[in-house]
Image (cartoon, rainbow, N blue to C red; front, side, top):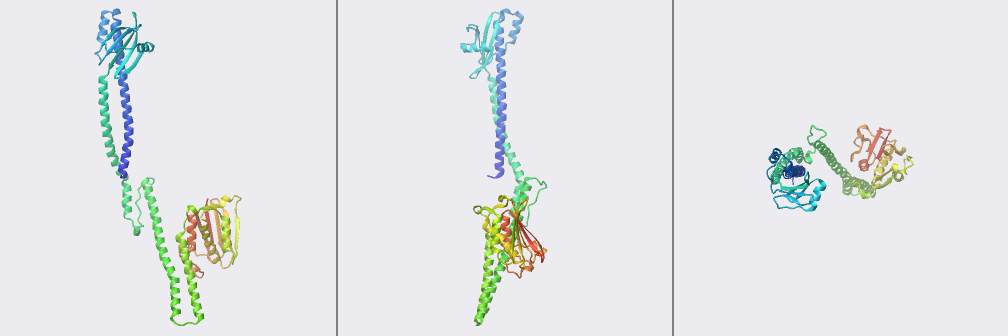
Length: 448
């Protein structure tokens, strides 16, 4: 079912419930008013009967004539009885109904009594006369009132059905109008392909409009997809190039060596070159695999104390030359420097940063510091090595990117991009400051 039909049906259903409650309330009030009006007629009827048949002896001819003029036309199925205080009938009009002693006693007790017997409405009056006390009970059927109520019910039923049909049709119209911007978004998205990820949805003039917010969200998603797609293309291009380089060297070295007879030292040198390039190739493939497979599985999450993790990293890579100094400026509560994450890949990330610091430190001391801030817990890794030029700082986290002054040192250009991805997955960020020939500081901050 289409959304506009579903919205129309939901709106119609809600309107139907509301309209039914309103019509039922109106019908109930009209029915109550009909009953009260008919009871008022019966009260007048009983009172007039009492005046006509019981007070006749005490009235002048002129007064009796006025009472006669007041006596209305007979009601439908009218039955009137008058009883004395000994519960004996003294007047009967349309003798078809008799009333029990209990009913008469209730009339005496309440002075006036209204009740129903089937379709008949009954009124009882306690009438005090100079010739004694009497009970007048009159009953009738409000045929005209019932007919009016039936007509009212039919009118309401017709209006109820017609209103629902009109509401559904109007609901479809308004749903179509309301969903028109979404249909436009859908049509715009249909023409966006991998080759046109630079296209964006048109925003409305109403910044807080839900449709506008949806368009903004989709545009942000398209921007991320475009960036991811470009990164992927760049990754494939660079990976192909980086993989070809050692393979070409290995093949070239093997072909040149096999072209002519060589001495044993020459063969050994060729094999050493092949082993060296194969090791580079193996390192590159391993780095590519790590970069492609990096992720966090919720099953692998654990509580990690960063002081212990940093100690393990330094113990693994800082035992040689140059020396690595570690300082801890931490509060007494371990929870403040404990995070939730994957210990294995966090170890890889910090190891890559520390290995870079050691590699580019020019045999000068590397300092690692762990400290807490207002925003979280941070790890600073500082070297006093070759530094990074300002133009290279914005690209160092791109896969395979290497600064111009780093080529004399071995590497693949994947370590920092892998570290940045891992840290971002752990709700952290990595910042770098550097001065050429003075050193570099990497600061990793995990938000709490």
